[in-house]
Image 1 (spheres, helix red, strand yellow):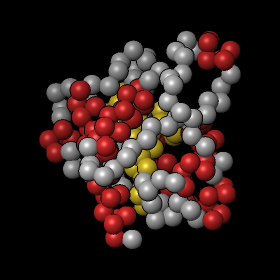
Image 2: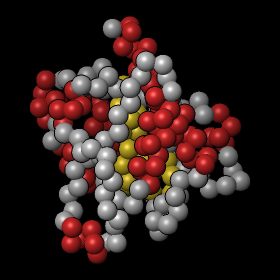
Image 3: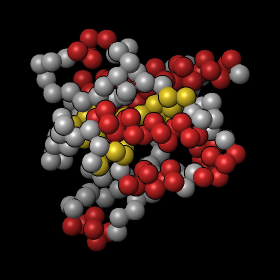
Image 4: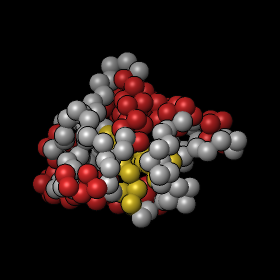
Length: 192
């Protein structure tokens, strides 16, 4: 809503595209809130990133799904999108495809890891392969001198009241996640 997930997604896309032979696309899910409600929330206008449909997922070799957190889970907009993927689930068109997760929360206690944990169920039902980043980001995973979102589950940021944008370290972790998952996706596709 306020651009935090989009900023991380742009870095993930850059990281994925840095892997030779990988094409990374950026999408957003349909908005479920009315313009009136968005106005009351002082939400800025939506970006010009294309809106994805469930059938677009079938064409991809892998995914990195990002969403803001609402009460320790993915936002209702993303959940509504995944709820519309029943046809893909029924035919298991996403089975065996690697998928990662990244997120934005309002605070340090806002659900960075619970959001990832509750989102994994969506991947499991589709038969996707969850690809966490673990501690592959190296020293950046152990940073204690500055506020940093993210975890072994995936890149993340803290939005606070909406005015805090992702830090350079959070953006670097997002780039790493994109590159890491793109490399794994490429290997899996080559092995198929």
